[in-house]
Image (cartoon, rainbow, N blue to C red; front, top):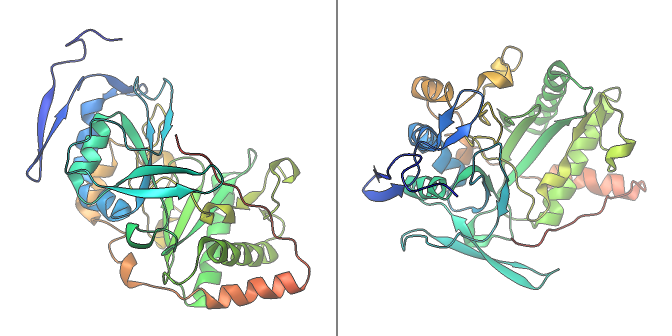
Length: 326
């Protein structure tokens, strides 16, 4: 345990009229370049409209690193104790465990900065919103490279995804994962439960696999996937499966950021170029590249028809799972 003042005296941050106390502001968080807890807070302040847009009204799981990203990671579904009265939550039920959890529900930037005070680095929101948490309004495509796959392979599969989305009349919004992969989000009508959205996502993944069978896999068990393949992870649309939000920092020594990009950037960008040190300037220049996502709503009915076709042909549907709240 650190001595009082070892990492600097607390600082008070005025976040749009809400006062947030940041303790140990000089605690090192990212070992590659030495950014601190205060640097992390300043990063989220710099991309405020983007991170709030990504999290607004969504149940949010927190990845907390009390001793910096080289220390222990805490996966936290329940809101940490000590939250100010203005921090809002959403109550979720986990039937398998017969448990409830009150998760953070961001409505303003001050909520994000308070979570940073509580050592949160990564924000992992649900793909549904508080008003109807059981009905997703976001379909998530996760291009997950196996160990021998390259970023060039990810780019190639991203272009195939873009091709299929265009044919469907869906607008996809790509972003780096903050790691080795790529995410594509599609806003959808909140008319279906998690099971159907996952069915639709699986049908899409199988179509991408048909078009690029040498590189794409939808094989459920990791041990059965080719080491150079790209797994199109439809399971990210299962209830209570979450991904790092757009503009979320990732818990690695470099402090990479899951960063929205344009389709015409995919062949040029390198994921490691997007960090808490570089993304604020990009955001200041380009703004929130996801700002139009809510106006580009897609009806997943064609994908559900594809799913029914596959199921009628005897294609097996992989199992789902759910985790207990922490």
